[in-house]
Image 1 (tube, one colour):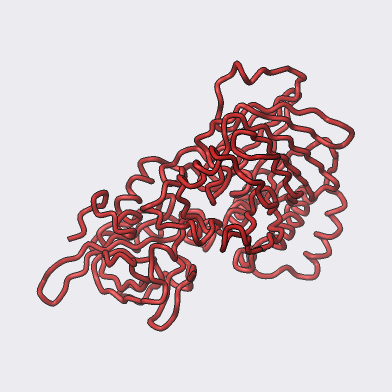
Image 2 (cartoon, one colour):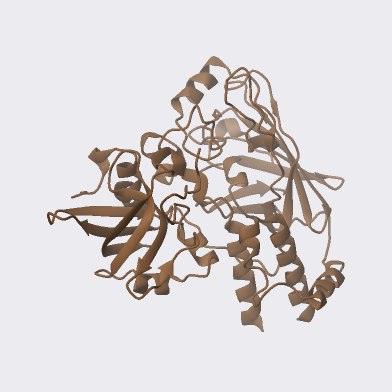
Length: 146
Length: 298
């Protein structure tokens, strides 16, 4: 029973801390929230860390050139509040995993985006804005539009 | 034990009420509250221990609306959540110089001042302490009361910091003390109000995400009221003649109880410098076009 109380209390902790933490770095200032990219690549590294989690993945073009992309994601507190665990996400985003990532690219034209969703080969998806406030599909503006 | 769980259910309901709809979705594992659960929660709410002189527990700002009024003096500027939305007084020349030098990126900053995080200088971007009163507005805060001291543990941001409020009747001469990020605070009770006067603040901290400055001469006068078991009210007046031409009189800020004494659990919410540096090089700087401080992109 004591364990149940702790679990509930931790849930409450997530709940009370889950509001507006993602928006504190001016997402719409760095990213074009009206432009959407869909990229197929391979995971290099996932970091579940403050101030925002990060997904690093490589994308190869038709000429074989590799661009090192990164995605800005929700912070650990928000990811956990959405029901995801570090163990789960580290396994899903293990290095070498083929992945399709959708999001809004940087205004600077660099290979960085704000995360919308990620889909693995088996259909597993970090979507519904669980992982970030970016666009999940072309034609849809991401959150944080200014 | 049932009472404790019942109280927690009440608090979770309270938390859900005061949070965003998205956050409320995690309330009640297993689905929405049943009528029986709601009835139990209502019945147990009356059993919450209440002492107007005991502020213990985890509190969170109730998200009171802050008017987004355009300020004709500045253009797109609007009232800041800072100081309960009360407009700032005119700045001194020194204050304006600091204000102009501060380059914010936070969502609560004015559009005309906001820059890409890579190009800004918000102390948050380097994991510098947020200081007080900025920490008060960035997430839950736990109050722990001991016979001679009240501790405020700020638990959002990302940041985790502690502020001491001495209530043992001591006197402090902050002119002889080094300034601190969270200042030197003395508290005493007047009736059911906790009066906290503080000074000795490190002026490297910003007052809030818009980059309003304060100097090491800042003095805060705070009045805490705890009118019922679920409510905490804080009214703050900021007096800093080096930065502002007159005192900044804040509006009342309302906080709601999230978890009571004995059931509090804090989230480990540190801003870790090595993680911040990794994020800056991997995401923030390249996103803002600062390639000189970015990871290899090709």
